[in-house]
Every structure is written in C-alpha cells, then in structure tokens.
Length: 167
Length: 378
Image 1 (cartoon, one colour):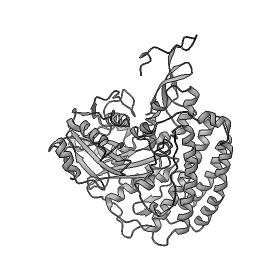
Image 2: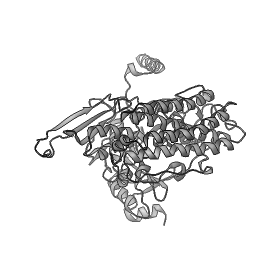
Image 3: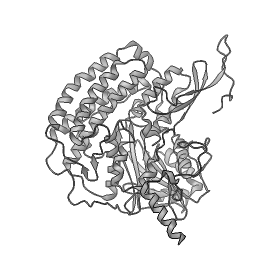
Image 4: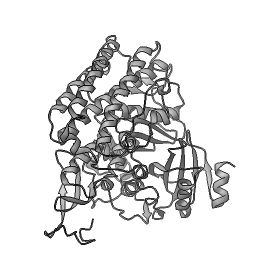
C-alpha cells in the first residue's frame, strides 16, 4: 500500500497528496485531524517520523484558504523525509502539535508571531521574535511597512502610486 | 513563567526563597543579545526561559522583496561565524527548484570551503566556551588557527567574514593558484594543534568538573526537541546530514561520525574536537582529488525564475541542520523563505537541560549549545 492509501484508509478521503514539492512526498490533511495524523506518523513503527525538522507558516495571499502550515518530518531510523500540510482561513485555529514533538513549541510561536496563525492548545502562545506590544504580523502579504522603514525605491513607488490615485 | 507554582524546597535549616532573575540581555557568555529569565532557589535553577528577539532583522521578509541572487549575501549575515555553510544551504534549496547540475570542480570547492568553515567555527566555539568557564588561553589558540583559514578565504573571495561565494550552479570564482598548497600546509600542521587543545583541556581537572554531568540532554529529549549537529550526536544519536541525507559530493569521502553517550557538556566538547579531526580527513581527500573543469554551468540566465513549487535544502552546518525552505510561484523572488536555523531550535531545549543546575553551570550549558544570536532571531 502506498503511503497515501494507508493514510486514507485510516483517516478518510480528506487526505490528499500534493505534487509541487521537490524531493519528498507532501500530504494535505484537514486541520481537525492533524494531531491524529501526526501521532500516527510518529508512533507507528513502519513510519517512525520522530523528528520534526521544520514547521513553517505560509501566507498564500489571495488564495483560499489563506494560510498554510507546513510540517517537515524526518525519520532518523529510516532516513526519510515527508511533508504534512494544513490549510486554514484567517482566524481559524490549527491544533498545536507541541506535545507530540516538543520542538514545535517555538516554531508555532514563531508562526503565530510573524503570520498570526493561531495554534489551539499551545501552552504559551505569545510572540517570540517581536516585542509583545507589536501591532500586526510582518510576514503577512498585506502587512503595511512603516514609511520610514521602506527602501528608497519603495518610497518613490508608493509616492507615485498615491499621486496617481489623487488625479 | 510563574515563580509561585510550587512551594520552594526547604533545604536544611535555611528557608529558601524563590526568585526571578534576569540573565542578560547582554551577558558576556551569550555572544549576542539574549535574555534568559531564571527562576532560582538560592544558587539552584528551577526553570529558565530564553527570550530571543532582541535582534530581529526580518531577514525572511526581506527575502520576499529581493531576487534569488540578491539574497545570497544576506545568508552570510545570519550566522557570521559560518557564512559559507549558510551560502551552501541556500543555493542547494534554489538549485533543486532550478534542476541544474553543478560541475564537479565546483562541488569539490564547495566541500573544501564548508569543511574549513566547520573547523574555523569549532575553533571559535572552543575558545568562547572555555573562556566562559574562565580560561583565556584556548581563545587565543582558537583565533590563531582560524586566522589561517580566514587568509585562505580572503585569497579566494576577498572577504574574511561575509563571503558571498556560492552561486546557483557553482561558486563565484575559481580558487587561486596558492590555495591548494596553502590549505594543505594548514591541515598538515593542524593535526598537532588539536592534540595540543586536548592536552590543555581534556585532562584538565577544572574543565572536567565544570563539564561532566552538567546540562544533560537525554536521547529522547534531543530527538523531541529536534536539536541537531554536535548537540544531537553528543546525546548518542548518530545522525549527520553528510551521511544520512547526503548532498553534494560527500558520499565520495571517508570519515566517521563521532557520538557521545550521556549528552552532557563534556560530550558536546568531545564530539566537536573529534569533528575537527574528521573535517581534516575530508579536506585531505578533497584537496588531493579536486578535478579540473568549469566552476559554473554554461548558460545560466542572469535573472533566474525557478519553476512553481517548493524545495527544502539543508546542510550539516557547524551548529547542526541548517535548512532553507523556499516557496516559488515562478517569479523572480521567493514568495516565502523560511530558514530552519540550528541555533534557534537547539536553544529551545535549554529549559530541559538546566533543571536543578547552578547558575554558574548555566554559563557552561549555554556555551556548549554554541549559539550565534544572529541566526537565532534572524
């Protein structure tokens, strides 16, 4: 049985395989079962994905659902790597996996800090890189960079744009 | 962090009060800006919570605004003690999206640079770590030998710290005439130098007392916290990306992966010392076998547009697994670039290592992680 078939027989048809990743298999799972799939992949001997290499949040801009969380999983015994993905809308929570792989704790805080993705069940979900009183989430595509922090060419560009709107 | 969760332990006749103490943001042992909130009972640490985020330079956001090529010099600035390894991981990620072949000569040069960088980085680590423990001499020794490596880098790419040397498909320029003899001269003398460091430290009573049994990270914790590099190997996990997820021409070289048993500061020290010897082995083989040929593939467009998709490129950097996760929409700049820095992840395991240790041990434990804060909060 292929991995997709195993996951589907266990967790239903909601699991999909995505093709645009170079090198590893990528599976899209619905947010509500991400914890079940995670512990299955970690604890089941045949998989043994005991090492969460990286967790990243992605803002997909205008696409629906807007946010994506990617989990890169490694198996130290079988030397294999796969990717799990979860997609949620703005404000929708992703169940935290930081009790399954403790490294997820900081990664989830980072995704929350920079993209505003909420992880439900996280014991300490607060900003990690930016000060606590910071407004907004800088890695969102619609984040407005303060005029003073812009590069000179960006300032020229925004000035030109506002002039055109004025006419 | 709550200081009042459980009542403080009653240690004999003295009532012990539970206190919250800030270490840093600029403590001499943190090598950058880092604050650690400590909960202490007398000299004992009950809990530690690192507050990173004093340096955040929004490198990942900047990456979205620049072309793929323009981002290479910025990777140098993430981990300024191992800039070559950062170049390496980033170009690997983009190359796998571009599907280009790297000429063999360039592959060899890349491996040589990366291994020299590992030695240089471990030398800085050894100096800084022992300096944290109160010894000044090894720092000078470490910097003395690192200087030779920086000279080799300078003659190759003109820079001593931020090299900007790797390119998609190869390296920016060929190694100069004097490089191979210079590098051979360095590594032939380096063999004795490592023995010297060991003579100075390995048998040293004070050093042993400060490191053995201090800051133990169990095998299970090491895996769950996803620590990598010498820290993971010190905890007894034989995992090295050069062997276990091979990239470039590493499979062509013979070398061993040293591991520790208990995962304490001592093991982390021993693993790094042994790694310097193994890097020297790789260098010997690579310098002898460096093939003739091109250093860049022919016909590479000036502005590259990788196909739509995602890739993850990672290398065994001196501090552990350094990865770049790149998302491309087919345009000239990445839509998302996430860096998986070994220091950020390794530092996450700090609380698991410090329980019930002394404040002075915390300095040793922090030093043994080998953090570069520029990489922690990017």
